Amino acid sequence: MPTGEFCVVCGRTGVPLTEGVCDACAAARVALVRAPKQVEIVLCPQCGARWSRGHWERAGLSSVLSSEDLAPFLEFHPEAGVRTLHWEETARSRSLRELRGTARVRFRGIERDVPLALTARVVARTCTDCGRRSGRYYTARLQLRGEAAPRTRRPKELRRQLGALWDRLREESRADWRQAVAWREELPEGLDVFFTDTLAARAVARLAKQRFAAGLVESASLVGRKNGQDVYRVTFCLRFPAASLAEVAGPPPAPAEAPIER
Image 1 (cartoon, rainbow, N blue to C red):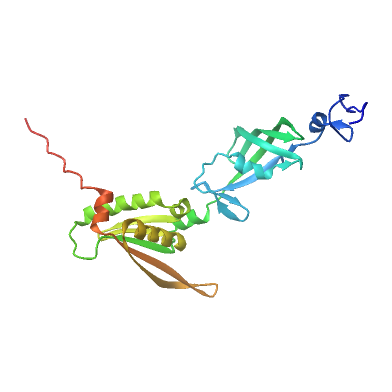
Image 2: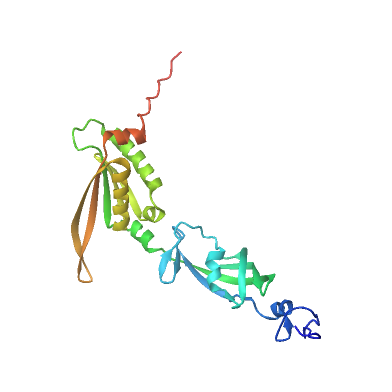
């Protein structure tokens, strides 16, 4: 930098200048982050999923708004890099929430905190999956059964073992597969689990076959037509060997002892 050049704002010399202004003064003069006055966020009151970019995502979250919810609404200076972003809810009503935040921004080698404030209008809308669950909608069913023959276990004990195995299978399944589970039903012959996504049901069935040596039979039934195409419901029948059921569920609980009369 030629001798005698100085920042036209603060008068400092010996520092890099851009169009006659040092980096510190440039950071103070430009808007590094802009927040709109009000934004709208659509979330499912049942599962916490957010409506974003034309589809539901991030199911399983709480109704508390986070940086992930609010960051897409912010406008950043092209030379600014965001280090951290924190928000705090300061007031709320039934549908409106007042939030204040702080963005830690790096601009031309200098970091500074930028205060932010906005109002979020929260719109409650039931997501597709929760709507289907409440309406008993499903596209696939898993039938969890014991060995075909001979039947050596009582129905109550078989259901206990299959329930324990299903709990283990859920733990080992991916999160998006678990989200596709609509409901389950206990039957005298075993356990039925209903899914709103056929691909998720098929993946869980294949996991059960691989993990617990289950026999797997897949079948489909025509239930109607939609947009000119046949619509099917798929059933995956899983039969678990006695060894797998005993390994997962363990022995039956011991009967409670009758109190001793004195």
